[in-house]
Image (tube, rainbow, N blue to C red; front, top):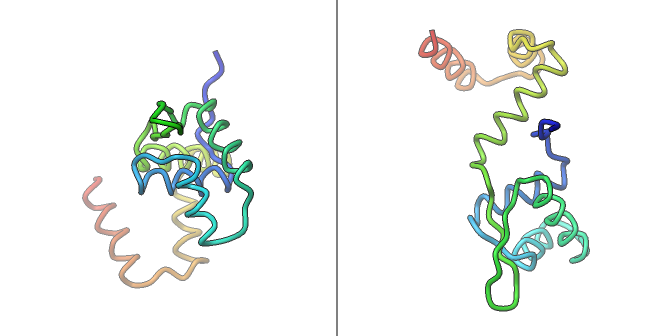
Length: 124
């Protein structure tokens, strides 16, 4: 059996972020939240949520007249998988070049740098 890819497309991640916040949502709930940010077709949201269900990121149950979707994994677990996949793909499994890039090229604030140092010290 092929291992499920943890990386989500931009649109899938956008939907998952909404479902994680709401904890459970209908297609209409997600559609209305997305409409606050940009135009999108209801059928597009429905299709993407079906894809997320097929991929195993959402489960659905019937409630009155609409399906209610719930995430199958916590946000941190999914994002952690996406980060691991990125580090493996881009940096051959080593997180050090990613951290160097973030520190040198992304202009982290003093607070962000201090937090990285604190986390590194706690880890070792």
